[in-house]
Length: 98
Image (cartoon, rainbow, N blue to C red; front, top):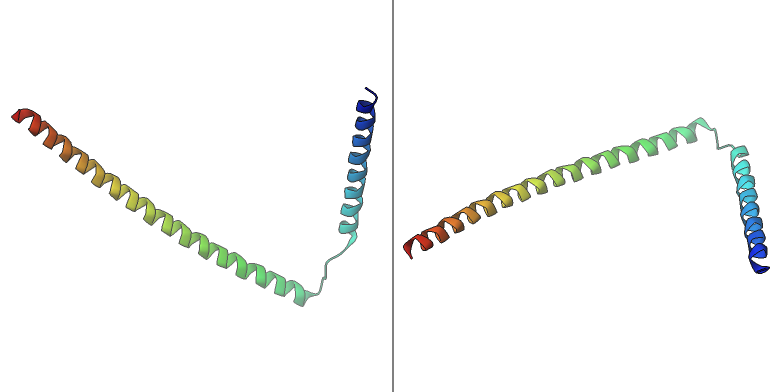
C-alpha cells in the first residue's frame, strides 16, 4: 500500500519537472530573435509564396481529378441502373412466357 503514494509522488514530480523544463524551453525560444535582415526576410517570403502557389496548383489539380472521378462513378451508376432495368424487363418477359 505504501508503493501507491510513493508512485503517485514520483509521477507528480516527473510531471512538474517536465512542465518546468518545457516552460524554460519556451522562454528560451521566445527570447531568441530571428534574423531581421530584409533580404533574408524577402527570400523567405518569396519561398513561402512559391510554396503556396505550388500547393494551390496541386489542390486545384486534385479537385479536378476528384470531380472527374465523381463523374465517372455517376456514369457507371447510370449504366448499372439501365442494365438492372433491362434485366428486370427480361425476367418479367420470361415469367410472362411461362
